[in-house]
Length: 165
Image (cartoon, rainbow, N blue to C red; front, side, top):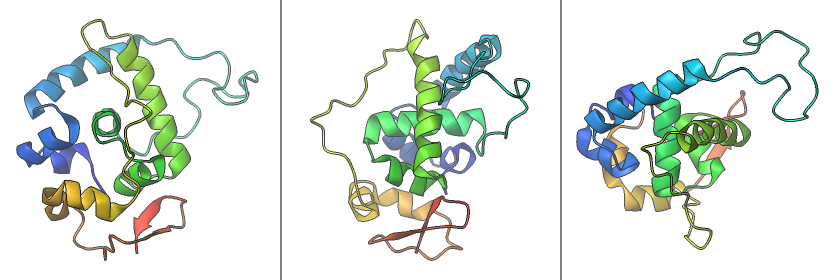
């Protein structure tokens, strides 16, 4: 599983995956944290547009901290993997990966000094772990060595996230 804490230990890999140096990322993270604190809570739910049933903040916490969610979004913007592949590398389900990216993109869009460029539709998506590893061989060294890894496939875990098989 990729996280901010383990990827930042390899600055060259961090830059190749996000397009930012660790210092540049940390400066961006401070701005995003500030926006996150200032953002008003949504009066309705995100999905069904139904009124809230619980108080703001009463739901589940995110699986990843803000730094990892921001890194995941920059990774998606730069690499353009499918949401299944993004979830695979960050140990999330496809829907949770998409929700995390959508939430972070909303914050990045309102940053005045961040030029948000979404991947163009004609750009080919990375659809397999093998295609990703071919493009970024240094990442193999960072992946959790305790879990078996097969770049040709993936299997869902008990929590719905994709894990290497």
